[in-house]
Length: 180
Image 1: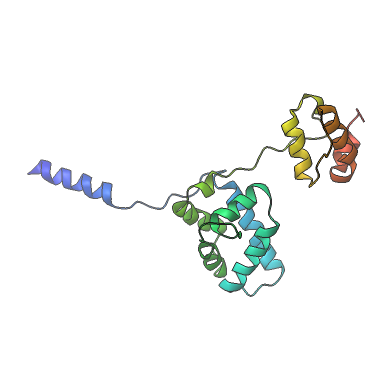
Image 2 (image 1 turned 120 degrees about the vertical axis):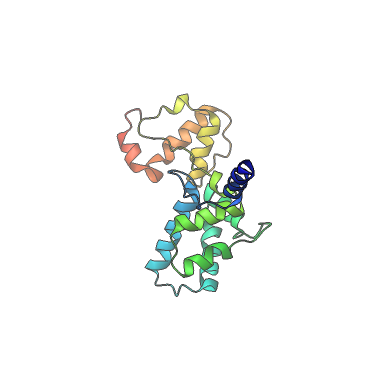
């Protein structure tokens, strides 16, 4: 009888939902960062904080998003090519000023891919040796700047293009470099 009672207690504890796990440091990096910037932009523009207005503004922000932030928008259904729509899981909580960390926790339960997104490590253009980077990384730098290198066939062509455009896109790095 005592074994059965012990087993019952263990089973009950295993089946009872525990407290919701809070996000760990660095988890849901893209979600928290993007939604925080978005929430600040809503506050700065004195938005009405109605769910429908938030959805429109979020869709507009997502149309301008690039890289990992665009992928996040795709996952929540805020892009035109998204397969699912859970945008209301963002707009409703934002309408009553819920913390973005809590929103991301709930999104993680709906789609775990959302919290797997991480920003790429940023290169310090003032100290990095461009000659030691791979062509893929050089192309990525140009892509982040919204530029392309048409007619570039060799690594040296990409390096030349980056050094040419650096004063425009990364002036501090251009001034710090000594190899120009």
